Amino acid sequence: MSIKIAPSILSADFADMGGAVRELEACGADAVHCDVMDGVFVPNLTFGMPMIKAVKKHTRLPLDVHLMIVSPERYIDAFIDAGADYLTFHTAATDKTEEILKKIKERKVIAGIAVNPDVPLSAVEKYIEKADMLLIMSVYAGFGGQKFIAESLQKVESAIRLRERLNPELIIEIDGGINLENIREVESFGVDIAVAGNCVFSAPDKKERIRLLQGKRKSEKNKG
Ligand code: DX5
Ligand code: ZN
Image (cartoon, rainbow, N blue to C red):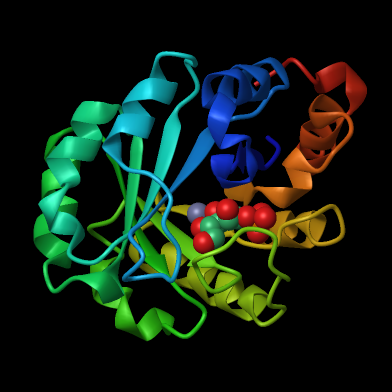
């Protein structure tokens, strides 16, 4: 099984999101990563529930919603109602992590917790058993097109050990600066999903780029 690729629509044309997600599906993407930013938790603003609801109509791919907002507990139901299939929030943005995880899981959505590069895994270890997914940021959340922080690989390695010890079912996702130079190393550690914004959207041939990131041979390109 190859690593799953979730292109981030942060790098897409905001005036044609329907077209962008249809193209991603046609190009073999595994999920659509949706970056929700509030201008407070991160110094950038993107979109909210209406965008999730709008893109949902254009694709059957799972929507992997990454909340970079303060007090995400305010909007959990709203993002699930809008169509999130994976819903991830930053534990540093709330003091209600346990309640949020419980709520997301009750609604049968994949519940993820995210850590920025300056948040040690020790800060989230107590939630690992209750989460479905751990999102490791390999850049500081806020903008697409940043450089991959090499130290993130050590965190990935520690996360894999944490998974073995506490929750073998845990999905590990990496987000930020993923490209063809670092994806195989990331994959070799055992990461399940890699987000890729700039690397996919800057490609002259997105289908080929996604296939290369997935590490699939040409004959494998249409298999799951
Ligand atoms: C950054 C976002 C990322 C970003 C990834 O805050 O969470 O998902 O879009 O973009 P690239 O792959 O360009 O670093
Ligand atoms: Zn993201």
